[in-house]
Length: 438
Image 1 (cartoon, rainbow, N blue to C red):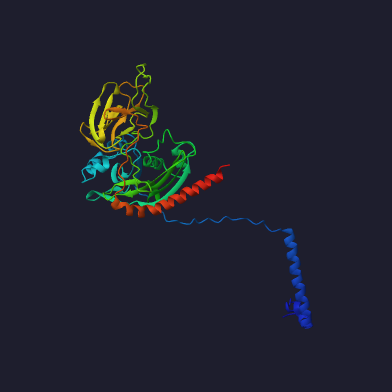
Image 2: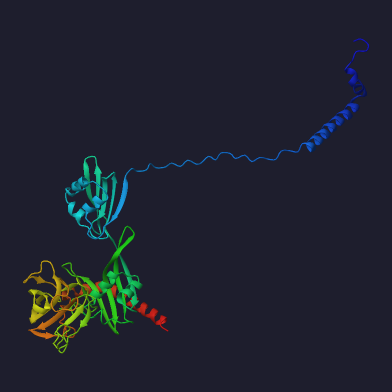
């Protein structure tokens, strides 16, 4: 190197010559300068505000079952509906309906429709794929289309029978009391049928009367279907207590007996129209509502809606069926012991009823109407003994047969637990009523 040339080593020569102590001071000064410069730059250049960045949301993928191309329909049958009309209204194939009707033992199950019945079916553009309908309490018709055509099956679903009990007090009506205790209208009708020989449930039941019932309930697949038979019952009417127990006879029929084994069924029904109101009683000096003259009324009139079933008061034979002057459409039954009963003003006769036909007590023989000399729908009922009119509302009715001696021991064994439950139920109900009465 010549004299006067720049020697970069000369810059650091003093530090190097000063040793380690001088180098440390120099390094510290250098770091401090850098930190000071950084602080000055930050104060002159503030940091940019944070920016929120929305990341795309990835939705969870759920497996979806393929949608069936078939349309499923549920049809509730209305009055006067037919399958032909239903298929036309829904634009379903009438050719498929004709094919269904030709299947063995299917036509009757298909065509017997009742209001309220439910039909479930599936189709594709009018072509039927399946049809299901309940044909009884325990059977369902199931029709499906296969490659070879339609196939029909009857699926049996037996009912589950469960015991039940209830008790109540009449406030306004039997139906209201039974409904209030958790029972159905059908159960109320059955209760009235059991005691119909002794109690007039239209004209004699009053507030304060009470009842207790053990009965069966019918269930299907865990769903309530209906109330079943009454097993034992008690009814207190105007302070008098009536009791009945159901017992199956050897021939398969069911009868009701008192706890002592006496049949509750009398030889004759006192009232051949269920829940008919007595509109005119037995009166030998009644003023006729049509003729406007005093004319003996040798029977009892029961007001009821047109079409109400009229039942045979007792076992017998049809002596007369036809039109009889002011009586209008009339049926006369001949019974044993010289007893005849007359039923007048019918709207129509029961199907198949002819002179000479045998009838059993409770069989429907006709329907309430207003034919003949009549001011409104009602049944005129007469009871005669050897041709002499007797008041059917007051004449003592002969008892039906008691339980046979050969069945008495079995009946008592069968009825004991039912009566024990009934007595306990009635006692508990009476206690609740006593506490509830101020």
